[in-house]
Length: 91
Image (cartoon, rainbow, N blue to C red):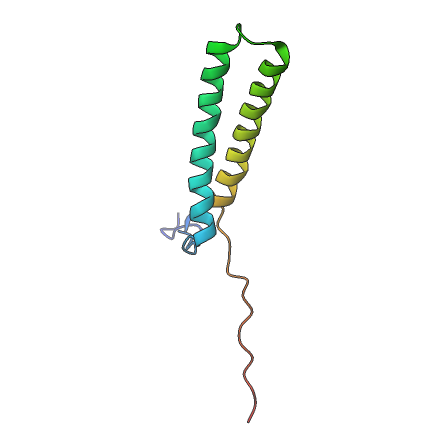
């Protein structure tokens, strides 16, 4: 049996997170927090309000959660640098 590490077990070098990825992660955490607050508010005041207000609270909670999922995915993805290399002019 070989002592070499298989290719699928080698460490992968990920580029550092860019500013927009960091901001996206922060927005995701805030959005998840707002969705949690929305669930609590809906549970507390759900019986005291009309059905259309309850539906609006549920929709807002769902949108906050969905935005959190998308932003967390964007912030956690390893994105390569797609900037083109500068052209070298022949003298």
